[in-house]
Image 1 (tube, rainbow, N blue to C red):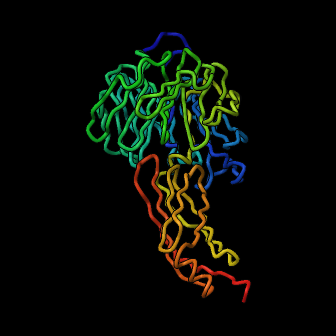
Image 2: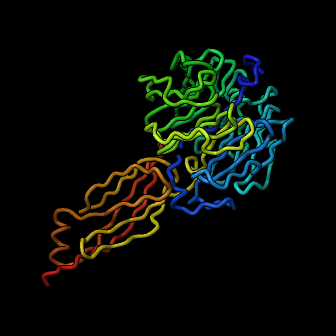
Image 3: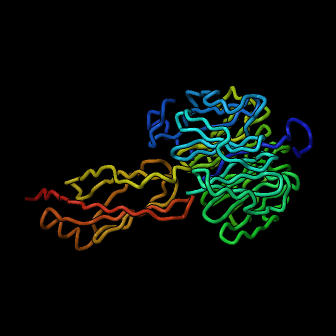
Length: 394
């Protein structure tokens, strides 16, 4: 195990990126700690000190510090990541473990990594899980097949954090205090993408506009634009953070020194270093809604307004991204999706608006397109809308 040798600097890491998402949905969705439906969102973390994975609602309530036992103190875990069906974690014993979202079906040896173990965070895209050992970034399919132990050489022997967004992959170089990036389509690497960071970077997370990392020994979170400019090494204060996760409205981190999960809004307000207390040397952090890439874009319901001639569409999305509502005769509506359900207002314009005023009704077809931050792929749904307009003068 590389590092400075103190307990503060032993390797560990986070989740993924993601893509992505704390959204305040707990106040909307009546979350529980039973088997979650995919409309819910939960935060997970690794208790490195006792070999468990903890879980809580996104408002910090209902914390379960021993949701899954992944090996106990003799086999601690490091990174954690979540899809719409499974939880993954990395161990120093040379395996990626997996369990179902309800905590059952625990398989500690799901994917065999290098003998030296995977002391880093995990990252996900639509079809793969990524990890790092001392010299390589590895990858496997989400079902455990297609294992590639040497996918990409990051030119660092101490990768801690990993994040994937589209074809881009980002990592923290703990030993050299810098952030590297690469292209998964070409396997090209740039180990000097952001350097130097303040001190000993650990976790990494990415959203649509920024990259975030934890400056371990400096007790801060750093932030930069996705092109590596605008570096801010003291974006937020921490207590020796390892894992970092970001969503549409919040950033989360694991405070190793004070045994807590911290949270703040992305505008730096609402900073709460003890958002979830009672952890045991926490390292990895994940939020499940942001990586729900297997979920479908759905139009749940349509509510018409006869007084206005409009229709309100309630749409569910598989993660953070951009929504676009279009249709012949409809005003173009573009919205940022930062929670699992979004409402879009279909409003008539031009000839359609005049037709509604004249005839009181019209049938049109609305088109909803969603482009996810995580994969960059677009999903499309259409719905026929029978718009009505009540004419008060008749």
